[in-house]
Amino acid sequence: MSFLNVKVGYFLAYRQIKRSSYWITALIIFIMMVTFLNLVVISGILVGLISGSSNDFRTHYSGDVFIKPNTEYKFIDNSRYIYQVASNLPDVDAVSVRYLEPVQLEANYKRLITGNKVRDVASSLLTGIDPEIENAVTSLSELVVEGTYLEDTDTNEVLIGSGLLEQYSIGLGESTLEGVQVGSNIRLSVGDTSQEVVVKGIVDTKTSEIAQRVYMTQKQMRNILGRNSDQSNEIAISLKDLEPPIDADRVKNDIVNSNISSSALVQNWEEAQGSFFKDLSSTFAILGNIIGATGLGVASITVFIVIFINAISRKKFIGIMKGIGISGSAIRFSYLFQSVFYACLGTAFGLMILYGLLVPYFELHPIDFPFSDGVLFVSTGGTLWRVGMLFVTTLIAGFVPAQMIIRKNTLDSILGR
Image 1 (tube, rainbow, N blue to C red):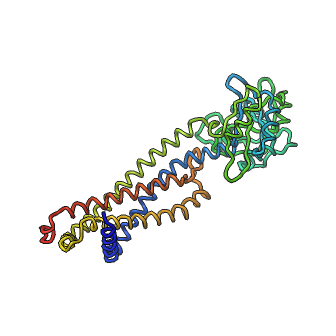
Image 2 (tube, helix red, strand yellow):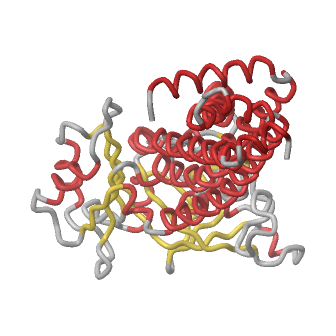
Image 3 (cartoon, one colour):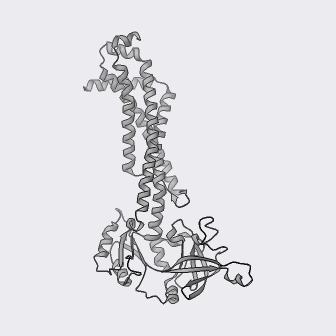
């Protein structure tokens, strides 16, 4: 390969593109653009479906570091010490301590006397929180769609998750309460202890760990249960919002190395989610790649056909060029440059649409899936990898037909045989 062949090939490609039909050129570039978007967007939406659910879990439930009891323990012992250790770490922004207790909810119980209503019950987890600190960690108040958020001075008032209410969970389960609104009275039963409370707000989210709970202040809950404040069930920790992001594993290890109780299991946010999100995300990524590969194959065939027809129609001209001394390598380069031209413009327009339109749109308007608010997940590495695949397949699609024509006998090409 000589530099002269490259220069001649570039000149021939430039002349060919300049003289070709604008409509055909625009169509090929459009196909390249759609193929690129197909490669990135389909996979991005499928992975974003899980990514949106994972982000909600982290943002509104687990925080960046999550502590729960080890499997053989019911409580996190010495919770106040763990709270102090975590709060004093320089990278920690806020620490929320939660107290949990299985509870039975009962609504419309006052109508039982008249015989007009059957027993309306549901099982849930009663969650005691410090409203201000919990909101600092998980922004729980943002999920209140009816009523108002809890205040530390509230007594006999609760927030109830949408997953426990019939009007929010139609067809999704039998253990729901019917007709419960903001201001409704419900009865909480824990063992032999019962307490009548008022629904102050409704928390609506697709994260089941939140939607299936009832929230009240820690003070009120401990008064009802007689729970020791040093025995919590969950501790959620949020880290400071810095650039670059703080390593959650480093904070996790700092807590583990602080001689905390063996009853505490400290996890980063990914570990707290378990393997479900990661496995499902990998599965959807494979499905997206399969769909994208199909589109890539269609685009490659399209480029192959266009260049093959172009080469066939110019077979006599190619023969003449070979006859006057233009090497086959220069002619091959001309078709490769044409392929690169189509791929470059198609990818450029695709990137403009992707980052200028689609990514901002899905950030503002997530896709409303039944179990998550899907976003468009686009990673820089994944995008560059798909750009590379598009270029390689386009180059192959341009090289093969050119090689088929150039290998023909020069005299046969000139005579059209």
